[in-house]
Image (cartoon, helix red, strand yellow):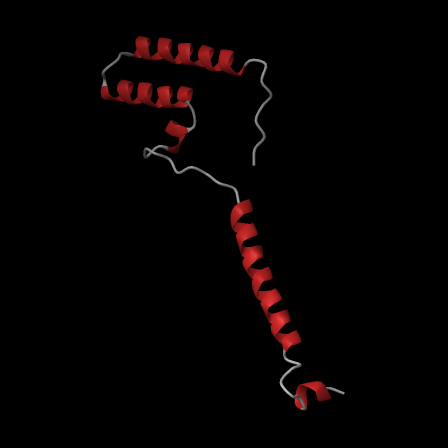
Length: 101
């Protein structure tokens, strides 16, 4: 039945060798495909992840920091936050909402 594996003259191993090489390259290509298809995310630059999402959020973070340090007063803080909300609304007007991953 499996006589070709037991009694061989050294020429029948090519099929086993070819199958092993095909399996090896299939595993390598599968690994590279998984690496290439995984979602990419940029690491945050600063300690606060929300600070790097976009220009408006970054401006909010800076504004909150300035208010927390006492560099600006409450009225100025609230006025500038309203300005940022209006800017964000105008920037995204007419655009569809982004899909979440």
